[in-house]
Structures are given as C-alpha cells and as structure tokens.
Image 1 (tube, one colour):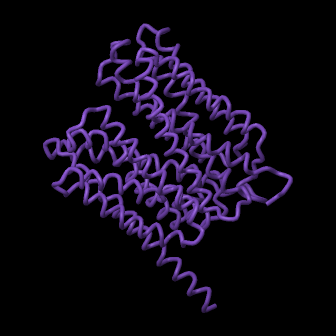
Image 2: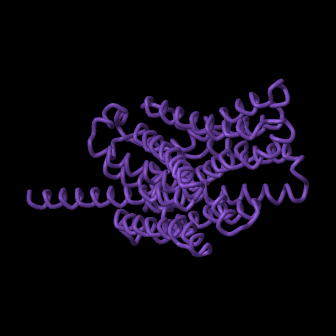
Length: 401
C-alpha cells in the first residue's frame, strides 16, 4: 500500500456512499402516508415511486456499462450531488406543481441517478485500492448499505415520533447533508484506476464471454434473494405475527437489514480465513433452508426467524459475486461492475414481483409467495457449484500442463 496516500479516506467516502444509497432507497417509502394526506396522491399512484426509482437506476447502470472511460472522481461526485439535490428537492419541488406527483417523481429520478452511480462506482473504487484482503473489504463496504437502511428507518421513525410526520420536509433536508458532506471526501481521497494499462473490456466483449454469463445469473439470483425477503418481511410480520405496520416495519425490513449487515460485517472481519466460493455455497444452502422455513412453517415465530436467517445467509451474495467475478475476469473494467449492478437490480425487481404474483395466485398467502421465490437461492447454489467445478477443472488442466 502506498504510504503517501491515505486509502482509509477512500474507504470512508465509499462507506458513506453506500449509506447515501440506503437513504435514497429507503427514506421516501416512509413518506407515502404524508404524500397521501398532504398531496392527495392515491395509493395506486404511490406505486410509481419505487418503479421509477428502479427503472432510472437500471438505465444508469446500463449507460455506465456502455462507457469504458468514465472519470471515476467526477462521476462519483455527481452521484453525491444528485442524491443531495433529490432528497432536498423533495421538501420543496412537489408543491410547485399543480400535480405534486410530478415534482415527487422528478426528485426520485434525480436521486435514482445518484444511487445508480454509487452502486456502479463504489465497488470498483474499493477493488482498485491496494488493500490486502479485497474480498473482506468488499463485504465490509456493502455492509454499510445495511447499516444505512437500519439508520434511516430507525432515525426517521424516532424523528416522526418526536416531531410529527408533518415535519418530514425538515428531515429530508437533514438526510441530504450526508451526501453533501461526502462530496468533499470524494473530491480529496485517492482513487486508482480499476484496470491498469488498458481501457478494460467493452460491454460487447463481456457479453460475448460465456463464463461471464454464469456470474450474471448468480448476480440476478443474489439480487432477487435479497430483495424478495427485504421487501416482503414487513407484510409478512403483520400477517403472521399479527403486529401493526410500525412494528412490522421495524421487525421486518429493519430486522432483515440488521441481520444482513451482521453477515457482511462478520465476513469483512473474519473472511480472510475462508475460501469465498465455498463460503458462498454453504451460505446459499442456508439461504435456501431459511426460505423453506419461512414459507412452510406453521409456527409464525419460526417462520419469521427463517426470514431473519435468510438475511444472514444472503449477506455475502452481492459483494461476493462482485469479488468472484472481478477475480476471474480481471480485465473487465467499469463495464463489468456496471453489468453486475444491472443484473443485481434486475433480480431486485424480478424477485419481489414473483413473490407478489405467487401470493396473489394463492389467495394472498405470503408464505406461498416466498416459497415461489425459493427458486432464487436454489439458482445461487447451482451457479456456485458450476463455478467451483469449472475452477477445479481449470486448476487440474494447469497442473497437467
């Protein structure tokens, strides 16, 4: 590690980058009731907010994949600027339109660009730093999304309890201070190129690589396994445990994020002693078992425990898939990280949608919906077995030659 460069500052900036992403992804859904009351936005129209957020984020991922020579420093600073503008704008812009939903969706689109850039760029920025254990560093980095999600849910809930939901505009501005502060961090921290001495592979080259498709499938399944449970645990807690929405939000999404953060933190501290693909395979098996427990148990608290256990199990999947892919395809460059983010987001959209469809077809049984989503941890297991067998085969061929 270069002693003249403080890469700890780069770490801190990327950590806060993922906290920023957690804020923009989780804060606005907490305001749905406020939008409904103040702006008379229908419940059906509110569904446009997460839809627009994920579509814009997916488009941002795709555009990043097409540009091989992104300026990382300028782009990551833009991510913090747009995140801050979107959050702060939410407090002022909607009331400037005769249809407030237009202003809300503009703000969502602006900070979704920031979220997409953070997702694509923070991982390669950390990967390019000369840290001794990159896999553990990647897991620790992604744990800060979980801590950010827990923080924004708990912090917002406490704020609303003390000052009332009607003061949400002040809280939006307060949360915007975090990306504003992080602009200075990214402007001054050392940032190394992800690919030395070349421009990296193009999107066409990567998509023409058959091995890369296995990692894309793994990433889709990882995103789906994570989001399916994360987005349905609140409703599951309400339905199975008989608690109200506030308790369901805290016990469900907040509890799931906490368990996932613990899993990533643990691997970040102890993971250097473990072989990543082997650890991911066992975690995939645990995730599959947790999904089956949540979906098949007739005892509510046991089923809910399965939900939380899936958070621990799925924790390694997203950062682990990134580390595995970058190690197996070292010349991938920005396009590799962007396509992986795109695949993860696609899975994050597909998984909860499948749960919803299965739930509806089973007369609103969320457990049946989660049973349908158990296909995703099964795909994780199959993908990792294929990757490990391929690695053993390649190592044997090298030994023979």
